Image 1: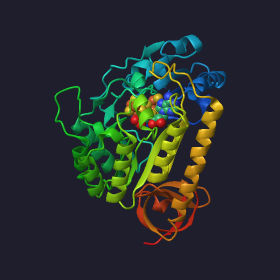
Image 2: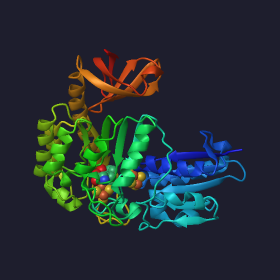
Image 3: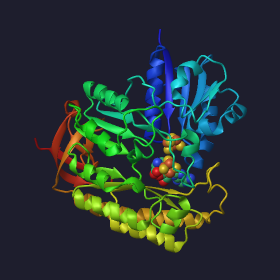
Amino acid sequence: MSKLLFIQTLGCAMNVRDSEHIIAELKKQDYEITQNLENADLILINTCSVREKPVHKLFSEIGAFDKVRKKGSKIGVCGCTASHLGSEIFKKAPFVDFVLGARSVSKIGVAINSPKFISTDINYDESEYAFGEFRTSPYKAFVNIMIGCDKKCSYCIVPQTRGDEISIPVQIILNEAKKAAQNGAKEIFLLGQNVNNYGKRFSNSHEKIDFSDLLNRLSEISGIQRIRFTSPHPLHMDDKFLRTFAENPKICKSIHMPLQSGSTKVLRDMKRGYTKEWYLDRALRLRELCPNLNISTDIIVAYPTENDEDFNDTMEVVGKVRFEQIFSFKFSPRPLTPAANLPLIDDKIASKRLTHLQSFHNEILDEIMAEQNGKIHEVYFEELRENGQVAGRSFSNFLVSVNGSEELLGKTKKVLIEKTQRMVLYGRVTD
Ligand code: SAH
Ligand code: SF4
Ligand code: F3S
């Protein structure tokens, strides 16, 4: 009889893919997924360390899991917090059976069978590891193209949890994408912390190609209709990348360009490597090249050296780029990072800036969404929603919902937009 696995995934798309890798490995050992914690033989939590709050929550959460779990079951802590806290997790939560860092997910098969197993080595090389095929969605396939991150952004813990940047060999990526396409996925979503720095370092002597060439090679795979990726780094957005992005018809016209701050001074303090002007030049050039482009971004407010003028620079960039989506956060000091011990900005000021940014952006977004009324978008349907609705993403990444049934899933249709909300467009299929 199969054993039951309960897995909770926090954090970014990389963690989602890591969880898929973990599930694929565990399926080889006869595990099946359950949504019911009390029945599970194995409970895994795949953690995120990027801000302080989720790390605090981790211990109360696994404590609660421990109370209700079945006798004889195991609990494992995986992912970025496992890398960063390591054996401290056993000290704070002695009932945890193993700790598996973000760079060691391939060792899950060993971890479950070795008492108090711990692997948090951020130098461990998983770049040549061909993972199993488990995928959460049959329509869209996440494909890792690199592991780790070589940047040293002053606020960020990721290089400490995922180690140095190594590109995954082209052949492994192409094979994974081909397999996904054969299994019916029409969209591939490439993952890495700095995807457009792809190809700088491999762990072995492999064919060396850059990100633009990788995109072109992937677009030749028959069956793949859409290619997305996250995150590109604004610093590496050279003209070749911009051209490839604009010209290749399979590359979805939506891009995540993490701004972090609009102030050149703060960007320098953060060690981001670009200026406000460079960022604006790249974003506005992309808008010129691709008329129906969606740009999303990440912004950190109240970085310790940010003053009112710096914050106004951020607002100015937001006003000029008119992002379709913004993920905004208050600065959160992270251990082991250069900014960890800088004096914090008063929390009231930080909150005020965050609210100000978000309400300014909501105004922009309401205008952008209202402009979609009467437009036609090509939507790839992926999700059944409540009340007889089916949803998908437009080529430019708007969430679009229509009346329909599962027949629409996995199909791309033209949709006339008839009603708009801040986060979703409603319409009807016209073909
Ligand atoms: N590689 C991506 C970011 C990965 S982390 C990039 O270069 O942009 C995802 C987002 O979390 C970051 O873009 C940043 O906005 C946010 N973040 C990272 N560290 C943070 C911190 N210490 N406090 C607040 N937000 C942070
Ligand atoms: Fe963190 Fe910077 Fe690397 Fe992104 S590029 S993961 S923000 S260190
Ligand atoms: Fe992702 Fe969080 Fe790790 S954002 S890389 S899971 S710290």
